[in-house]
Structure formats: C-alpha cells, structure tokens
Image (cartoon, rainbow, N blue to C red):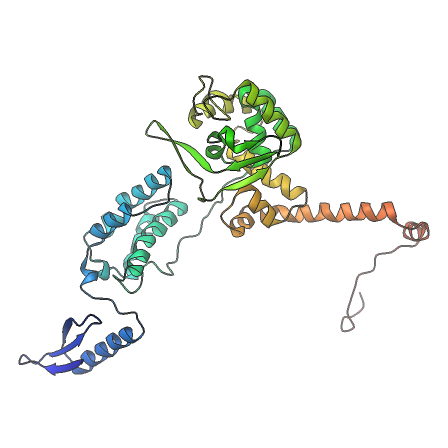
Length: 382
C-alpha cells in the first residue's frame, strides 16, 4: 500500500509499489506535496499510464543509439539524413541528458537556437520531427509518459519551393533537345509523374507496354559513390497507366537502349547516376530548348500534376497517379491550380450546352438574354 511517513530529519517519505511489486519512494519537504505525488502515481497505475521512473534515467544518447539500430523501413538516403540530424543537432543538445529530464522547454530551446543560427525553416522542422520520433518511441516503450516534442510550435516556412510547369510544347522542346537515349525518360517524368529515383530504378519486368502500365516499386540513389536501390519515398508501390503514345515510345526505347534489366541506362549500359545525367544531359538540353535556366528535373513531375489538373482530374486522382503520401500534400502543392481548372471545366460545360441548346432558347439567349445579380428578400435593391 502507498503511504506517507515523516522521517527523523523532518522530511516526508512517500512510498508505493509499482505494478510488478517493486517498492519506490521519494522524499518531500511538505506532507501535502508527498500526498499529491502519491495520488498522481496511483492514478497513472489505475489508468495504465504508469512509467517506472528508473527507466527515464537512461540518457538520450544511449537510447537514440538503440533507436537507430532498430529504425527499419527507410531507404539508404533517408537513413543518412536521419543520422545527420541526430549527430549534428539532437545529440549535442540532449546526448547526456536522461530521457525523463528533457522538458518541452528544452525542445523549444533547440528550435530557437537552430532558427537563430540561420537554418532554413524546413531544416529546423526536419530536425524537430526526427528528434520527436525518438521521444515518441520512448513513450511507446514505456520509458517516459509524454514526448517533450509533442505539440511543439515550429517556425513557418517563409518560402515555398518554387515550382515551374511546362506546357506540352515545352516538354516536346526539352525532349527534342536531349540525347535520344533519354528522350522517353523526359516524357515518362512529364506524363507519368515519376520521381527521378523511381525513373532510374525501373526494371524491365515492371513495365508492361501492352497494358500501358508501369509498376513503381523502388527508387535508385547514389550514396558515397555507390548506386543503391531501395523503397520509394513514401514506401508504397503504385501502378501508373501511361498514355498510348508513351507506351509506344517506351516500347521503341526498350528495343534501342535498355540493358542489364533496367529500362533506362547510361551510355555504358549501367544504371543512371542522376548527378551525371543532370550535368551532362539535362542542363545542356534545358539551355538548348531555351527553357528557364533554373528548371529542375523534378519540375517535370510538377508538370504532370498540372496537366492532370488542367484536364479536370480530382485531387485524389492526382495524388494516386503521382504517388503522394496524402491528399494534403497534393493540395498544399497544387491546390492553387484548381481555380483555373474549374474555369476551364465551366467553359467546357458551356460549350456542351451551346452545341445541344434548342433553337428557340438559343435565339432567346442571343437577343434577350440578360444576367441579373441575385439578391435575397432582405437586401436593398442594387
């Protein structure tokens, strides 16, 4: 049973037994503080939230090593980014601190210090989210009761990524200016919405020209000079059904250039290294096609989304086609394009009506039709 007893030195000792039967105690100057503490402990035991205070004495540095060792399901590039955030920012701040001693104030201090150092808001956010994952896991492991990074306010992103969208003629110009080996890769990015890593990781068995489908399963990256194939950015696979012209183009490409099981390869028949491709092929083609100098390869993926939206596709359809993790991501990136798309849809509906309108109504619209502003009964006349 829990109890409070006064010690010879005048302090009050609160004692209780944890769910396993082990005894714990803590000393207080005032009896009321000891009693309040016991009430909170007994309440946590009753609600299943009890955490052994001894577990919280493990340092962040020791625990994060265990966390990294068991962090599965991420690609090699993502792991490098995670380790960099931990080693460069989180460990210097919390490494020697017991997990149970880290408070929300410490989390806010980390964010404030990184911001003061001039780090981009996106970098500060990434560091906070990664560190927060460590503490969230400690909560799930029953080491601490609550993450100090829960509900942490992060600095707003002042500048969103500038996106460029090409029209169909500009895509044709870019594809025409690049080495023929990569011509179809430009079209797959612009009309299939694949990320660069997904594009270069495509194996021949993932491409069905007759069914016009591409199974996007893996992503290729270059890490420390080595080509590494891992999961996609979201960790999910998707199937993209490409336009007929593109399926035909891919079929012709396979006959001319594919080798070693990959759809796209370098001139030596090896997997494409994106940095080399950008320097040797893509950037010169952008200049030759007289396109904006800062046009990134990733802008072809943005172009695909814009083309889908311009053709009246819903956000959910765009999300599934290009492989976003959530519809919120799609909305945040491309929501601003929908007003134009809605106007184009309305014009298309108007054209449909005009083609089918009865003659008497058509004459009325041409001669006597008038648009009148709507007002309700409580409004004054306009």
